[in-house]
Length: 240
Image (cartoon, rainbow, N blue to C red; front, side, top):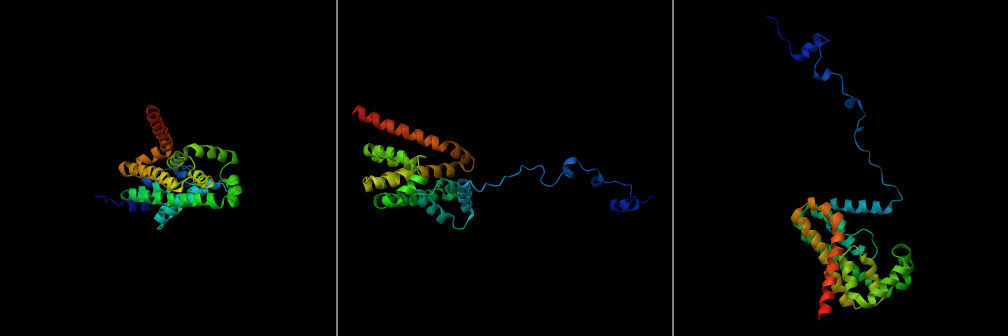
């Protein structure tokens, strides 16, 4: 009886024998490693805003993520360019059970930072005004904010706190134009809490699938909500 050799022995005894691994390689296998992957372009050195954005996201993976969220929320209310929503969303997606805790941290840091912005405008405006106009907002836009503050101070602060309108502009302007500080704090707290807790609630309820929706449509919907809210109040005022 002819003895059947194991596959490895068959290959050794007969060099012409082939196995599945000896078949000619497909072109894809002969390609260089990573040839099928889409190359990731490095962020240009001049793209400072994008670099800051990426750095902000990286804080979500730090053991100091919560402290970073507070500091970011605080700084964004007077000078930092990246909104705290970015880090709040990233942290919440990692721990959805802490969604409302992160919303509270964002609100607390932002309102306290808004108080600092008010103080800057009230006491230090002459020293920082040129920097403000050079790097944060144009002077003519700032003067338009002054006109709005004269008639709608509470609504100006609330709308800036709740919508994507730069909140930092209105915190410093509030101090420059010396609007009521208690009213400023109340409007800031309502607007900021409304924004951050709404984001937290959406993430807690729907999880990762809602992230794209928030990034694409939340700002538009917040503006629409404010328009409807203000419209309702104006209508009630006209009726009475």
